[in-house]
Length: 312
Length: 254
Picture 1 (cartoon, each protein chain N blue to C red):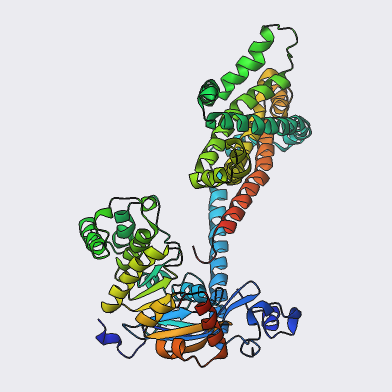
Picture 2 (picture 1 turned 30 degrees about the vertical axis):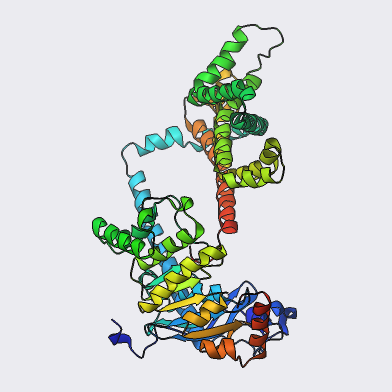
């Protein structure tokens, strides 16, 4: 918080059209605000502190970086490691193919992500339904989440992607991409349903009471009062699951679909050099980083909007 | 305890300024609080009473001016803010109790974790405090199971548990039913007779008149009028104070 010409100007009423007029009213004739030497001294001190902190951070980063570099380069076996995992030649060969495969991962992410949100929400709502009529639905929803959260994703994928085509069912696709997407959706919907349910239960009962007192039905209370609050609160964990889903789209390659992982695998199979795996891995990391930053940003924004300000 | 600081005000604010974004909440606040006295802050909603208290408790950084606690400047960025906060108790309008802790845990948290008082002694002291505030049997309850007045008394006990030098009370009865207001005000009366130095923001003019040694009327970001309760509430010098008090009377709060 530094004094700027703008702030000093705002206060005397001729700068920026009397921005704080609401607070002055016709009150005691406001002399133009001039920051006191005390404030200027404090700010000088804070700036000096900040500069010192930056300098220390830069220095310690430099030292740490240099130490790590020397450690890695002088480690035994580094030349061989470098050739096997970090070969520029194979990286150049694999990169365009990996990117081409990545397009499949992205499409899977979008479609599965949307399906997961819808299915997860349905399951979560089914678990919170009241009344004896819905008992079987509640049990089914609970069984579904219990089962698919416990089932290893890789087994789920093998059963759906490899097992289902073996049934030779009429009208059921054998496309590994569709089947893989189905398996991913089944598992992730179970996770997301739990996230939604936690959100629904975290909304204070007084909110439901207030809604019901206005004459809203249970369903309306859920729809207009509880769910909006629950969903808003659960955005960070939901984005977390989305990041996770994004990585796991790579697993559809077990059925032979040519995604980024499979594309890398093909190059590795031909060359016996493992650089393409590194390339594919880095591409996924590069994809998740913006998503993670988005999650952080959303969390920070929610916190800011809830906090009453000040030092907390 | 008081011998050392006689003459030096417990709290002294000078030219304090605080803005939020573009709006100036505190323009030029000057205030002195002598040991063992009670200061009541009055003024319309939004006149900066709460902000003043939050600045004094170092829950907000001031933009300009200085605040001294027992003569020591606490707004200096070099000051140890945590050490200062340990000497100031704050009671919030909305209680701000920790809902995941029992009454006893709420009260003993700071003595045990900050002041390193052994658990058994901290709990013994907490029980004594609760007894004094008329909450003897409530030590094991969770805050959500108590009435508003009880919760606010627990919040006062929590603030008192660390034996603060100064107690700041921010509209502590504003969220309470009228019949619960009395029990909280009684506690404040008791604290005054114990000699606790307090600053309280309040809308209870009758209570301010009874308990305060000094009343400050906040308006437009300054302490517009400051004096004894008889003078400020009975015979205000400023037209704006008179207007404010007239509105309060019309609302039936005096």
